[in-house]
Image (cartoon, rainbow, N blue to C red; front, side, top):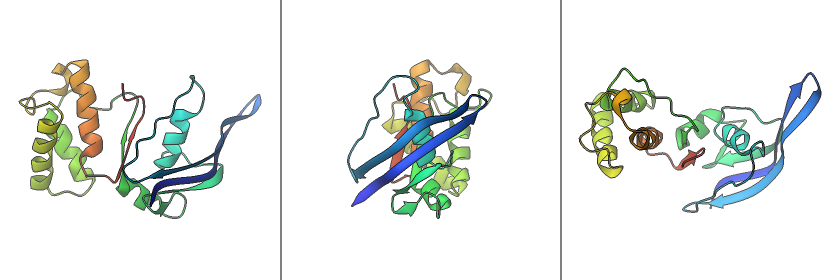
Length: 166
């Protein structure tokens, strides 16, 4: 079964100089359990493609499904099925790791106790054990990146998108 499928997925931006084709019709199929990496130079459309597949940016052409949900007809289903870790983290520097993770879980409609339990699981799994009560501003760069990944995994998504994971 395809977990991600695209046919002619495209995105054109409008500029004063005219249209800019950021993504020119991607066709791909990713099956459940597979790992796919987009490689290419800056400006190749990698982030634009990820942003379309996660409903953060509407495509201007083509079609796609993520975990069986159509990108245009069921964007809420796509968002429920995927986790997204952006290039630059989005953590609040003034709150604890625990608060950040629990808040993320609550955004995905986990109860507070479910979110707290999941936060503990993820901090253990991702080498953040013992850091739950530290402010996110005190974390090292690697710890912050692992926290970003934990946030993307908080709701147990079927698909995890990592933009510039290193």
